[in-house]
Image (cartoon, rainbow, N blue to C red; front, side, top):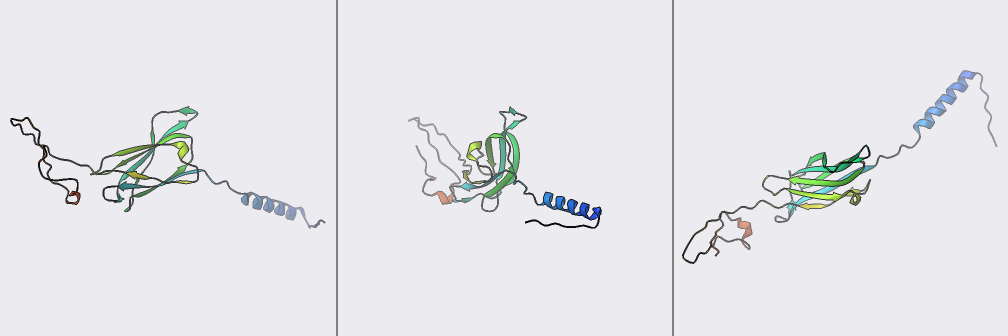
Length: 170
């Protein structure tokens, strides 16, 4: 079963061939780019909530031009949202390891290394990263006849009554 078309001139045939080629080229499927996607949370375990406004730096050990470089190269910097979540997305490349560095005023800095094999291409990698608030105390040393060391903490957090006291400890 076939169809035969008759055209009056060669110009019509040329237009139909060009249009067919144009439609064929534009209808070809485009391959989806391979992506690395991270959607994770920075969390304060003492307050049981996400840490907003934390700076998150994503670095990687990248293989470039066939050569492995042991140093970590920064590939992104993001801030956490009001609930402590951050999102990061990049085109896939040959990477050996990732380093997530987290910082926020009033908290200890945290750095976590992730093996690149743990992060799957085109799948969202999600994890929770714990950071702890900085803690400071004043230590006063008294010398007495028994050579004891005494200390007392000042400006105790009122929410921490189960673990902290203003009483002197010897």
